[in-house]
Length: 250
Image 1 (cartoon, rainbow, N blue to C red):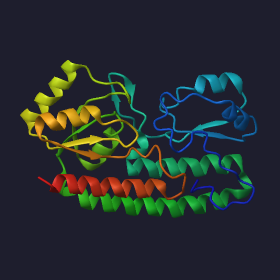
Image 2: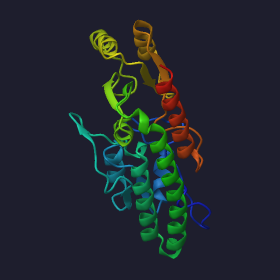
Image 3: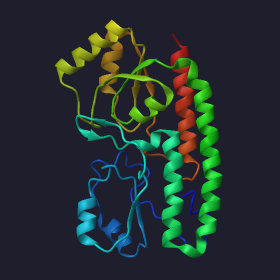
């Protein structure tokens, strides 16, 4: 949205509503298919995030598709590539550069405007990166527990240690044994910070907090919210505020 902002004749359609949440289980709608029929380019996150891509490719084999995660070094685990690359602000810069390049290739007459918009947004992202770095530098090595596999890139950028991920997929409640193991880990490592997400229930986090005395905070993976060009930076600044508060409140 930022890269194409204010350019005449260019229409950006967000195929997934801003309240959708993570895209792992998103189902393509009839409205989506209609939008894709008339699209000049389909820009996706990539890295395996959009599980519906096989359906799209089969239906529209000639549709130009571009992955914003191109060129990013992926974090992998036993399940494969983690696709939540945008939560690292350095990666967000790469994604913005990719977007400007993709749009310029598809619409050469506006190439200069795409590059100008991208440069402006990259400056905002670079400022955000520096603000987060300077604010979180003194908390490097802090151990946290999350409730979705969304934050490895974020943790890597800021030197945080994800001690455990309780719910590996949204809505996949941990077993009693897994929950007990996490409670024991929290007690043993004296972890004080549990981070749930606003898009999903925090029942497991509440149980762990009750049993250990740890506090539950909310970290937003920037997958929902206002469909506005300033949303990402606003969400990340809120995450920064939450982290600083949680690490300072001990």
